[in-house]
Length: 351
Image 1 (cartoon, one colour):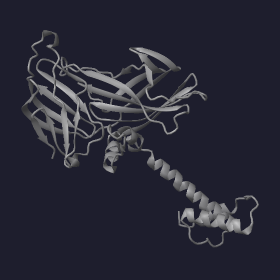
Image 2 (cartoon, one colour):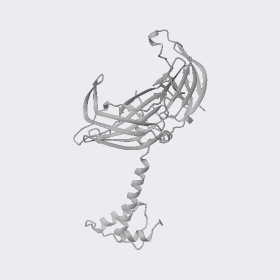
Image 3 (spheres, one colour):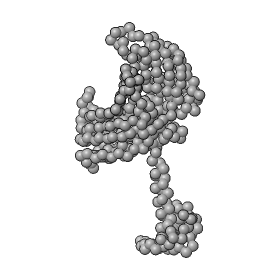
Image 4 (tube, helix red, strand yellow):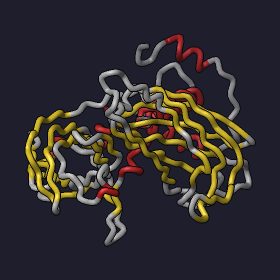
């Protein structure tokens, strides 16, 4: 469309409008403010001033809608979840633009909505890689219900991953765990709450995987496996974790020592969200009660600016010959800012 398309302007000219009574000074001020908001500095010839105000207001509305749509990305939806809170000061460190961009690359927008017993749950987005996933959902309870707590859970939350083991994988096994975290509210006393389900796994690939998830009875925990129901209902979802996150695959093949243990680091698969590490030749535990449990070292991420963070291992799987485990990062990792990672006494430079 031209800057001032004739047909478009004539359609605005034909609109019959009524403005509330204003004096001349008020009319001039309304005209000036609306034109300025739309970025129009000069009046448009042939068009009445009243219609110019309508046109300028329409332009403002269009750009507002476009800006809102632009902001709806996985990065914008998850950035508060991944923002770090300093334990000593309580200050929140916001994500950098590059970290938000990494989330956008590793995520997918979803829009699945289920309503049961007057409560609506909307699955909004997912972000993840091969060994971890985060699913963002919004709960809207009936009016009058206040969701103002930070430790909501579901009394039951089974997830089906369709973990079919191929012949080549048979015997390797898999391990999957998940938990749920409530997001902090800007309006804590309303009937809405945002939650994030975090999944950690070893032995299967979560990327592009179809899953079925059932959420039953939003509740507050009041003891071991005991819950107080806040909102009763059952919400079922069938979705695809439709993302393919780039990873750096590093061949290491070095023996590492940690505490009184040792093992060989075979490979490290490093993404912006986690590190998946395969160990072999682990030290055999002396205690027969723990002979199938392998202790693994913590992972230390050292940045080029000298700061570092320690990551504990998550889900793991394997046998006497090898063991794989995943380390989930607390915030997206920017490879360009990482100097090295360390497992035990083995340092692995990141190039």
